[in-house]
Length: 611
Ligand code: PEP
Ligand code: MN
Ligand code: NA
Image (cartoon, rainbow, N blue to C red; front, side, top):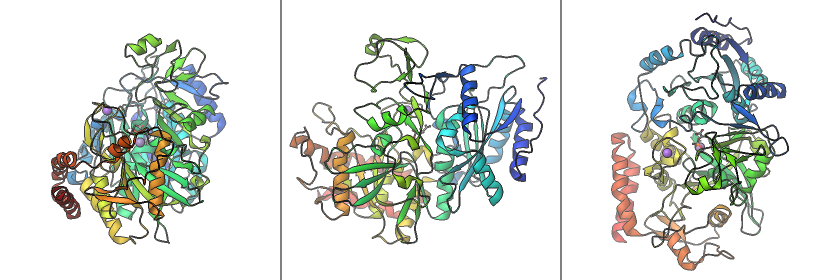
């Protein structure tokens, strides 16, 4: 190799950061080093470069201003859970749900991968903060990456650049070092590919050191390290140590016809409609919904004893397919404002994007995400124009129903937490937990059919506790204990009430969805808020409290009373069939399973036996 090593920079007065950047440059051997400043000129320069490199296609300015289409390598389209590691010092601290390797061994392996891995590329340094720069203790990070796609996406998804760097310097603040490489060095004179990546992938977290190392993938959750890696995996470990919660939850502001305001947080596994619910247009008259967050909630207790949630993100990285005028018109308005990156969607002949579910009728001709010609006949033959996990990456500020409280570093007080999954059977449309410990049980046993958001089979039921299975930075048994401890240490009257929901239940007779979902989910939210206000009736069942007959508002809804009844039904036989699965799930945790959860399971068994 004749490429010379980049000279050490003197871009920051923070000597720790300066030393780390120099050390990484010496190891990875980039052509040059660029510090990300966060200006509009920088965005223009980077996106122009990505267009020139063939990675981006600029969309039509009138249709999607300042926006870009991008197709990844077909092998690099989703989070790689089997390549994701929690490298705690002790294996037991990663727990039975995470991959683990000893930190020293992992570092030795990855250091060899990183050696020279940025040859021929620019190394970018991105100072960022998750949450507000004005927070009492801002949560800083610095991502080093050799991908301009990652830089542009990070500029949308997190508060980045000079202002953040100056704050790190002035406060001499700790930051999470997050190292990323696509793992595709370029030899002298070698032309780049559209989407560089490697067959070898590692997404690695060192929770005690609060450090992230990622290699080989350019895809969202594997590469935009502020999001899942920092704000969930590393932050969950910090939150355990500090007595707060870092959760995979949307945050929604609801205003009732009487003007009562309630903030609700809701956990659903990836690709189960969090972004749709976060942007819901209520169909029930008189209700307003506004978005605070669509994916991540950081929740800390306020001086008044209530639990306050902040959305640490700056943008949305939403699943595109299924997003359309009828399902999520607010998301369509958000992206229409431009300044967005679309990955693995289809490209229209007039320089716009399309995906399955955007419109009822597909355009007559498209370029699909693999770059092939596509016509509706291909669709009928089963070829999707957009990858099922294709994404829009768009600024949160463009959401027309963004609640003003999004900008409040102290967050919003949460009245209710919803746990939802995608289940064809068993789980009712909505039910309320009896108390916090029972709510923890509902979250700990949450299950869902798998989706395209991660590589692997689709449609298989798996336990996904609090929708955090792929995002927990430590032992899941300890995580349950942390949830229970929060219930013990705080005033139960001020804790959020906990609910389970399932929009996806099917009619056992014909397989059709029992509930229309989308905007009509506001009817479920209405019942939840009315419960909080003491105005909605519920009946006891073995699994919790479900709406009393007539308590769920279905006025004007085209649905039979039998379908409502089936959607809300708690079938003792179905739940009895669930028990061995929960037993098996709990057995995984051995003696780190809190006794209170075994007690909850015994209570459920007892109630079902008596039913
Ligand atoms: C991602 O995979 O990049 C991502 C945002 O996560 P999720 O799968 O939860 O949508
Ligand atoms: Mn998510
Ligand atoms: Na999958």
